[in-house]
Length: 317
Ligand code: SF4
Image (cartoon, rainbow, N blue to C red; front, side, top):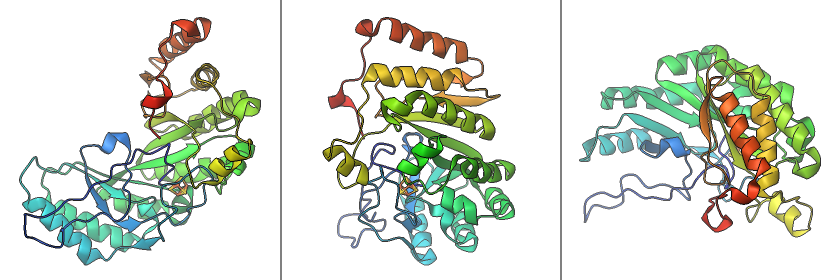
């Protein structure tokens, strides 16, 4: 899965060898995206782009043609990274948009090289599109997990079928639950994302409640919310230019978030709205903090004039 500009923060970087060494030993192709929680991870571009690349809101890989990189190039990058001074690598994120779609044999090759190189390694993660989860069997995901690929980031975006269709997500809510639960069955930690504002005002409450139902049916380790924002070059931005995108304001989005949180019934899930696209930053562990989060949002809705929402100029995409 990769995600839209709004969903995943971009980190554009190029790691170069010592002066005079050319070409750079790790050179990232195009803009590189990773989840906020992978800020301190070694990022390897196992694949380039997103094999699906259709989501209406996502600008991340529109300029890239999907391909799987040669394993020997990645092994050389791993060796190079291991030789660099600095802290020991303990987390690795496999970019780009849906590395899980690559053949298990290829991914197992990367994982073997990582395990053999970084003794402190404790987590390897990647984005997983619903389409990648459709083609991976539970047994394959178990084998990959045992080799070290223990966490996937999955953009659920919405649990409402109409909204999912408008987003061109490629799956409906029932299929989203089915494929996500394959990963759950394989023992992989899921970090899931919901897009606030994706249904506009008309579907706001239904989108919130349906999204909570889907998250409840999956029971992921993490759930986070982001705010849908049109990004240039996407069908969503084109719809916005035609005046067809319903921009919700921060108070309306807070009401939607309140409905979403109020309908969550989870046993042990960490909730965050800390992505840069959000107007409010909240965090908690569910179910322990559910009441506090709902009360906080009720207070926001009761006195929005006293709330310091993140201004648009500070929000990221
Ligand atoms: S699955 Fe959709 S959201 Fe994820 S990277 Fe591909 S096009 Fe973007």
